[in-house]
Length: 273
Image 1: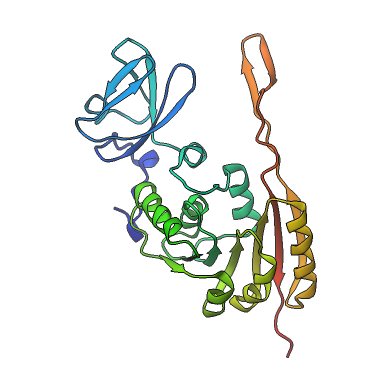
Image 2: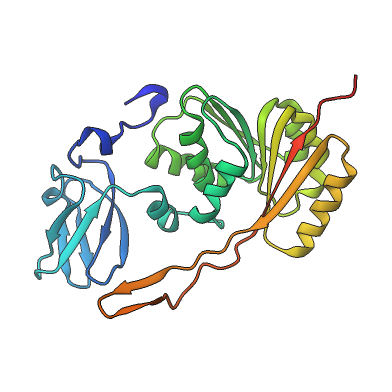
């Protein structure tokens, strides 16, 4: 284990696939399967099966054959491939949106970040990677089952996170007890929480909010305008369209990850002196 309990960086060290790891398996029709490498375990596909024991010890990025001779690719999952396959009971923040959270929310190594609404921990994983072992992350969630799910996913896909703390409760009640460089609101209705977020943020800190509908966005905009401690708010939407690129066929994919939500950022002003 590396510093702060996170797993080693296998992409840099070239460590073979080990028992207990989570791998992403991709069959010949590009179907993806997230699986635990447990000794004695057997993974079944439409084109046969593969034993975990035959994968353990192979290099990352190996090609294996099923019992019926079908080819299956085996990788340590990247973040963008992990999240769509993540075990969850609530909607996740998609990878296309996570990048915007990290960049426009200015999440940096060593930052003290508070997120509200942890869900299955998809964004939490990205935040822990971004702040590094010197940063601190607090996740406020009102549902205990979501906290349990997030803890399970973090332990499984990140490792022990000594710089991460979960808080069970309502964001409006818990935020005043925190002090942060960055605050993230991923809530069904963040507007009533804006004053509490302003109280938790240091001067110059950044607030990032995520809402799925225009009605929520309008209410959020009104709440930010009514809160004198926030300024320079910006809102945008992210759309993503994959392309099918093959021999003699280059066209937009039939399916598109279109609207998922609106991201709004605002700066915390210094208190009047």
